[in-house]
Length: 219
Image (cartoon, rainbow, N blue to C red; front, side, top):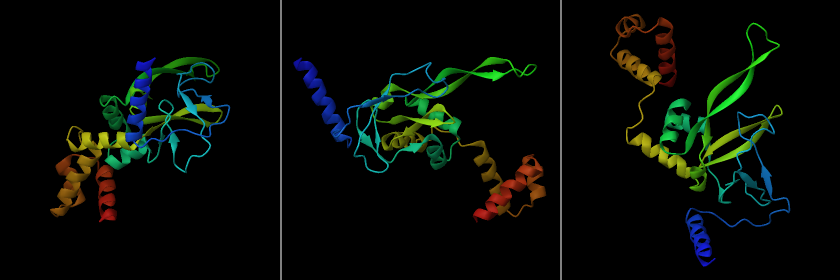
């Protein structure tokens, strides 16, 4: 029992160092189970619980495992925009960092020849790892849209710093769209016309025109 108390005390110190605060003023019905995206309601439950806190400040989210209150979280799409990465490449980075893992999910879709019949469609979907939640790198929360329970993955400020370090180390390749835009911008600054850029880069005329409009509007 003493070793368990020591372990709890150590975890409490770690949480306080990360900016955590003790949970107080919890109602009697403290925990609310939620189901993850890619599953039908009532079929699968991953086991995370979310303590319901009565006195949270705006923007604060409860970590479902550690009970810490965190703020400054961003969605994967928002982190992708901030780092100028595609969501897919950002998911690759998060997977290498141990924040996400891709799991196999399934949903029913109509068949082509007989739309009244359905068939299973298997696909991979990102899922927060328990280690990432325990380390306060990401927080999964529940969202209900159109009577379907979906998961929203939020990256905490600590997780955002890990992603930023990974990008700054140069381990992340530049998006192809950014590479094309940089090459077109370089040729524009050299005085080449759009027709000359099309011939030099072998890119479609519509692609060059679109990037030229974007570059000129940002100038």
